[in-house]
Length: 175
Image (tube, rainbow, N blue to C red; front, top):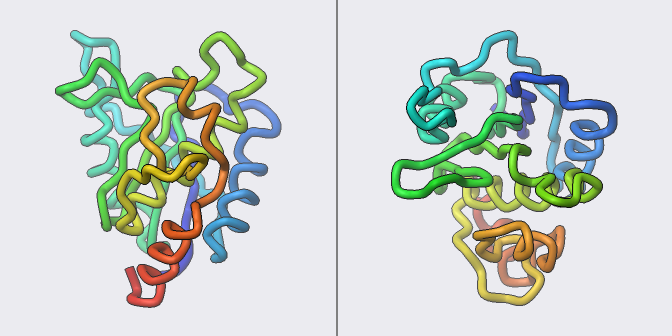
């Protein structure tokens, strides 16, 4: 197993220019092979009809069974995600695990032109968690907590120095 697979698992078409730039950004930041994957199925069992949203934990379980050739997998979707204790999440990851998911559903809020940038930041953020990184207090670090799009907008698109060291250490130990 090697590298990262980024899969569009949305219900609609991602549109031009969303996934390819994301894959390039992740490749540069993670310093490893990142490729675009294809998923002919969708995790329908994750849909909660009462909430009209998708349970990100169920999606993570489903993603964990996909693309066994890759070390890590991240699903990109356009459906609205939740965890039981929150009304929504931008994404979720298995801490020091294999799978992550990010939703575009709320990333285009009020400013659709910022979608690609926000998606790059949140995807790298969730993959950081997959490599064992936790939330960071350094100003501008992509691993900063993001309860809203305003916080996503003010953070950078890269790991701070400390998070980069932790990521590199994680990779050295085969995580």
